[in-house]
Length: 129
Image (cartoon, rainbow, N blue to C red; front, side, top):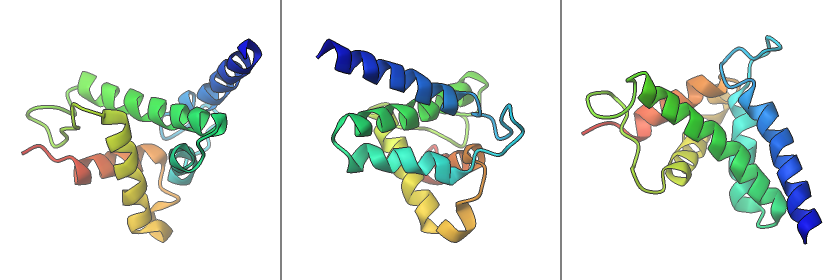
């Protein structure tokens, strides 16, 4: 059992490295990180209840939470802005909203940079009232 958690941790670290490094629209390699690359683990989180699904959920939600936290830190989310994410179950709510938003016009949105798609989905799904 310990080996399983160790391997899960190592896989999570490897996956997180791949997701966190290209978090800005232009990655370190100069390639765009498209919305489809973020949608895939966001969907797998719900579609696979095994450890693979847990790792996918971490990959997706850590990108999303980092993005949302960064927006809040620079004053682009929260009271007085266009984006007010829910205080409860934030990671899941934003993940589901992001996937729905991308699939709302998939042929147009699938190649958008993930950051642009996530920002647009936040504005559309969680406007401040």
